[in-house]
Length: 109
Length: 109
Length: 109
Length: 109
Image (cartoon, rainbow over all chains, first blue to last red; front, side, top):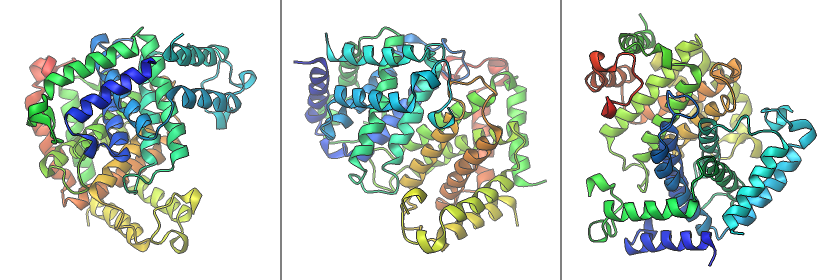
């Protein structure tokens, strides 16, 4: 069984043991993902680029992944497929010859 | 090779072809993750729980995953390990007998 | 003295008594604003539209305002001017005859 | 009439001309505030602390203020009162003698 399937199964088991599927609609899952992303961001607040506490980053990033995987499962997305498809689309928005070494957004390149 | 390794390798290849590692410090990756989480959230704005456009959710969620995997790679986290560890920790914060059917936060249970 | 000036002065006094101006660069203020917006959002998580705790909303919204006013001060923006200018710009993006009763984004109207 | 009342009145007029009150429940207003905060944050992505485009900051910050004022109005909060009350509460969490010159969170001071 793939790693992503194992992770997702563990998340669903945790959810179903608590009878939480009733709360896990797509909108609230997206909302939860934002809340967790904000908690991750807080670890970098007022700090230099690399000064966040590694153990706390680990925990908050795990929470972000949890809701991202739950949202992917809710829509029956294959995570590998959607990320590789997005990389492919971004390759056109950010062609190497224009984007190399530049942090500009595609519409400003 | 595991799926997560394949996804991460594709992301690093995309990054390195564009010489973008110089921009990808942990703080800005966490910031990018928040920006993408916000774009995902926007798809649900003013809408009922299930009314977001599925194809757009696919794209924005892919962006969220991209930065989450890049951040995990930056810290050398094993994604499966950190999510399973978090589920285990949450099992103690949300014991089944107290949390079942309740949407309350652990400190209000 | 205007209310906004009074609020801003109180925020600057609080900041300066603690010698915190050194941390309050625009990027970290924008980051702090996002962290606080996420804490506000969490109060609505898994809940119906009107079920957030009013007293907690009050506190988290106050934090959002604090960083918004500090950011406005950092750029020397007049808050009334910039909001009224944005309403004026939005009136063109969302003309009444097209936007009335619709929650669509301007580029989908 | 106070500036904040003038801003709020202009926002309500814009909303009511478009018959949008039906969409402006507290949860979606909090969600909109997060979306706009994310757009503001994006202006700082991959950039040094002061390198965001000032005119774009002006627009995105105006959007943040718009939803913050609408949310305050929805709950009938007096913005000055709630911010001054929060400063007062924070003065206890961050006493000058402990917090001076430190970026630590109150629970780590």
